[in-house]
Image (tube, rainbow, N blue to C red; front, side):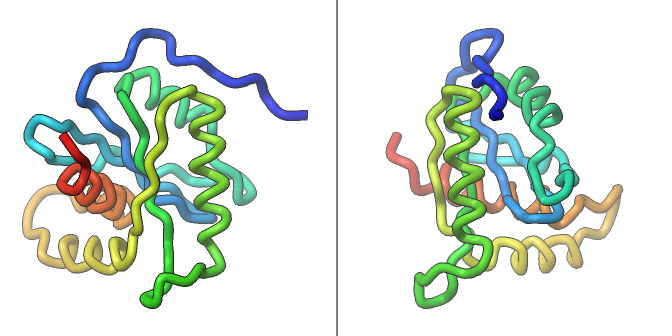
Length: 148
């Protein structure tokens, strides 16, 4: 039995987006806004038995009230699917169904690798988990490429 879809409690905040780096162990989350086309890491959520922590995601949706959700879809260098591609696409569909928000998919090729490089160059403050940093890169990529 599946849970009933969840509707946002209040109208979306114009120009605010949440980005997701889906993984079977962890899901990175970032927030961004269209005016400056910038994104920032928010949190890394642990999955529960390979399933998204929907309660935590619901809290993020309610807090940020995004206009849309952006999900990184992992593909190989040649554009073909890898073992996580279908799971990430299923996660994107579930987000849309649960929260009744537009969901955009973006190729996340090398976002985790780039996030690791950025984090290794991070020289002060508390390090940001790679998954949240990867979500930032995914969202930033979409914000820069999305039509305005």
